[in-house]
Length: 221
Length: 200
Image 1 (cartoon, one colour):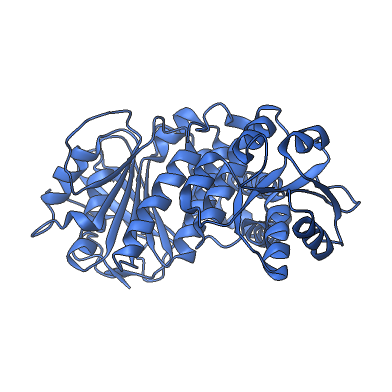
Image 2 (cartoon, helix red, strand yellow):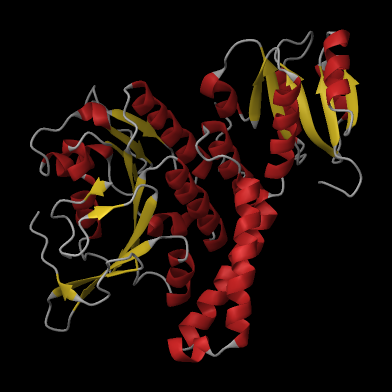
C-alpha cells in the first residue's frame, strides 16, 4: 500500500493500492502540483522511489519543492524526466535527470522513465511513485487521441509494475469532453475548485472509501 | 500491414545455417532470408511485417538498414539479433525489440508474435479511444438518470470493455522496458514522427 500521510485532507482515504493512478484536476493556480507533491513525498520517507515527469518547470525547481516536504531528501530515490526545455547545468550531481527536448516527444519521455526505473531496480527500489505534471502541456503539443493512448500505456505500466501514479490537468484549459475522455483512464479523480467566496475545496471520486462530497482544502506548503 | 495471408518475416543473417534454422522455426509465416543489409533493402517493401536483423553483418550495418527502413517510411517492426546484451542503446536507436543470440525456438517465435501483436496496437487503441470519447460526449450531454435508461450508453459500455481487452492483449507486458517503449513508439509513428528522437 502507498501511504498518503496527511497529503489528502479526506479522512477516509489514507492509502492507495499498488497499481493505482489518480488524476488531479482543477483550475489553473489552484495548487495541483503542490497537492501532487504532498501525495508523492511521503513515499520518500517510506523507502519508495519517486519518478517525476515535468513539462513546464525545471528539475531543480521540483527538487526544492520536494526538500521542503521531507525530513531529509535522499536524492538516490528521486529521478526526474525534465521536458521543460531547460539545459540547466549543475542541478545536483546525485540527482538522476533525463532531459527530453520537447513535451511532445513521448518516445523520449518513455525512454527517460525506463532508464530511471532501471536505476531504481539496481538500487533495489521496487515501489515507485510516479508523477506527471502536467497533461495540459502534452495537450498543447499533441492531439487528444495521442495523449489518451499515451496515458493508457503509461497507467498500464504503473499497474503492471505495482506503482502508484498522479497526473495533473488544468480543467479550465480544456473542454469538459476532453476532461471526461481522459478521466476514463484513471482509477480515481481528485478535483479542486474555488468557491465564489474564494475558499478552496476538494473532492475525490472513483475510489472505494471516497466520500464524493466537496470538502474544504487548505494546502500550507 | 497484416493481411489475411501469412505475415511476412524477413531474416537478415549472413550465416546460412543459422538463417535456415530460424526459417524452419518460423515456417508458419511467409519467411524470406537474405545474407546482407544491401539485399535486405532490395527485398524490403510495404508487405514485410517483421525484420530480424543480425547485429554483425558484412557490408552496411544493421543500424544503417534500420535508418533506411525508417526514412522510407516502411511500416514494419525491426528486431535486432545480437550476441551482446544491448540494454537500452538498441531500443534508443529505434529498434523495436532485441533478441539475444543464440535465441531458442520459443524465444524467436515469441518475439515475432509480440511484434505482430504490437503492430495492431495503434488501430486497437484508436478504436478504444473513439468509443471512450463517444461515452464522454453522452456523459457531458445527459444526466446520470437519463444515461441509466439509455440503450446506446449501455451498449457503449459493453463495447468499451471488449475493446479494452483487445488493447490490453496487443499492448504486451508493460513491466518490460522494451515493450513499454515499443508501445509508445507505436502510437507516435503516424502522427508525430517528426518529433521522435532518432539521434540516439
